[in-house]
Image 1 (cartoon, one colour):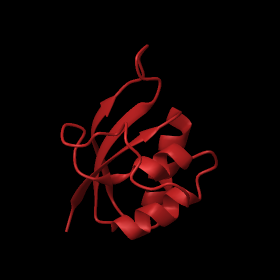
Image 2: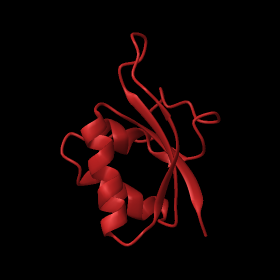
Image 3: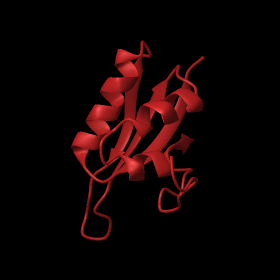
Image 4: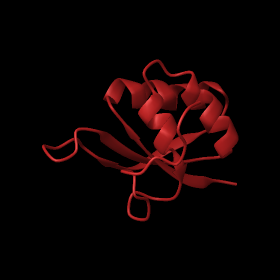
Length: 92
């Protein structure tokens, strides 16, 4: 079953590293939306679909160097339905 997730990342390299870790773990990844950094929000916002569970994704995100914002904001949903300005968890 494919689920849609969204997150915020401080840098594109954090996002790229995370998505590569998901693929390397054997889960397909399709990026379905992005919101590029702007003067009002310096972070990259990403929406993607995968077969991985949120637990698997959080474990992989915790292994991204400087991926703390990604880990704190990763959640099920779309860019349209998620308030990525809010953290859903504090520390890995």
